[in-house]
Length: 115
Length: 113
Image (tube, helix red, strand yellow):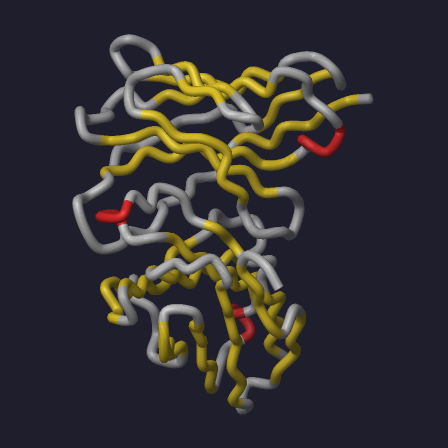
C-alpha cells in the first residue's frame, strides 16, 4: 500500500448505529487531518492531529469522535448520526510545518450515507 | 488566512495551455499561495505552492504577480484528465505544528476534446 488509504470506501448506516472510519498513511508523516465534503459545499476541516495530539477541533459535534493511536493511523468514530451528516469524509496527512510539511496528501475518501 | 476569489468555471481545449486565475488582494507577507485540484469524488491532489517567486514542477507553473495580489496556475498542455475543480488557497505556514487547509469553491476546469 502506498500513500493514504481509507476504509471502508462506502458506508451506509442508520441513525442509531455506531461505526468507525479508518485512515492509514504510508508516507512517514507526523500530522493527520479529517475533512468533510457535503454535496455542493467546499471541503470543511474537522480535526487536526500533530504528533498524535489533537491540535484543532473545528466546532465539530460530539457525535464525531476522532482517535489517533499512532502517527500512521487515524480513526473517526461515528455514533447517532443525522441524515445531514451524509458526505464524503476525507483523511489527509503531511509532515509537520517545522519539518517543511507544506503539502497535504489526501486519501480517496469514505462515502457515508446516513439513513 | 487571506480570502481568495476564483472564477466558478472555465473551459479549455485539449492540448492548449489552461490558465487559471486567482485573486488574493489581502494576502500578507508571510502567506503562501497553494493550488490543489479535485477530480470528481476523489481526494484533493496537491499541485504546487509559492511565496513570491514563480514556481514550476512536473505538473504546472505558478505565476505570482509582483504585488502578490493575484496568481495564475498554468497547465501547459491540458489533457482530458485535467478536468477537475482547482482550488487556490492562501495560508500562513508557521514554524511548528500542523495547520488544516481552508478550501473555497474553486474553479471547475473542463477540458474540451
